[in-house]
Amino acid sequence: MQSLFSEIDENGVELIGGLYPRDEFIRLYEALSGLPVDPVRLAYYDVFSLWRGSIHVLATHRGS
Image (tube, rainbow, N blue to C red; front, side, top):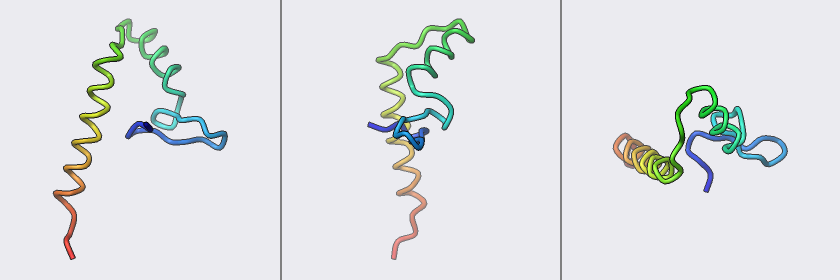
């Protein structure tokens, strides 16, 4: 599943925020922040972000 805030580069690699592959992004975040990333919580927030984005799109859609 592609993340909500990601792009696919010219080589077909998913880049988080258009910057880094997911594993590298998480590794850098942990190294720079000193905070661990819990994969279970991250998965929850991935689903939550997709759900919330869907609600925003549906709520602002102009019906025809």
